Length: 289
Ligand code: HPA
Image (tube, rainbow, N blue to C red; front, side, top):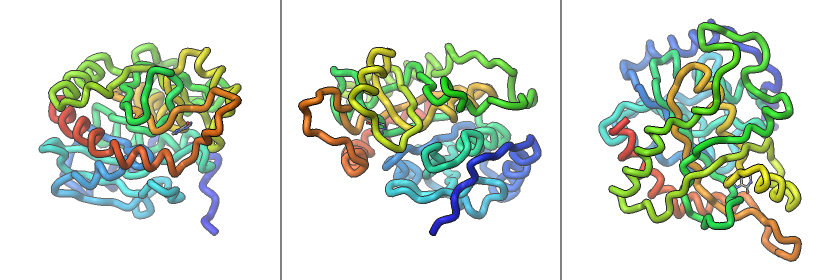
């Protein structure tokens, strides 16, 4: 049996620094862009050229992944369409049992590596009735539902060397990067399935009940998923610009007479169909950041 991941963890500046220094000593690459690949979207990292790859288990202090179908566990440095990037192929999810601080550990490491912009991708369920399966939603804002319940990664001692005690979140998703996503989608002829909306994070791993979906729709969420928000909160705390992209892999069930059942296989099947479009969008926009 896999050992349980660390459920409670607190890290010091020195921990993040040790990880960053270890990586800096092993690659001469200095990416300004980091990409966190969501479920089924890790193949983006395979597109990188001149790759330098570090399995998470080899990186000091880095969390190691419990491999869920569709997630690998490695940090990949390299050039995406000519632009130096670092990619997380496989992220850490709260539902796997990691603490919310562990989930966000890589983001502070990115900041210490000199990264300035973070692109986060995820698979999400569509709450907005006008969305279709296969749409890509540019995240305009988020609802941090675990945060409502005390699971905010910034709870606890504030390390001022990363950011302020009470960071602003009304500008979490960079307006210029969102505009760039739409502009690039137009150029790449994939704007017909690009949406913009609000992402709500739930802890998971159970999918939402019908009543829960109704609540989330009433809250104003357009898509629901089990990731991204903690990383974005930590990224904004340390001053990274953020672009978030959700691939709508399924529509949530809101009808008590429906026989549709959301399942992970459907989620992965949709990511396979749209992964290439998402990769094309990301690889063209990174060159313009
Ligand atoms: N709910 C939560 N997370 C998800 C979903 C969903 O419907 N689809 C993909 N990730």
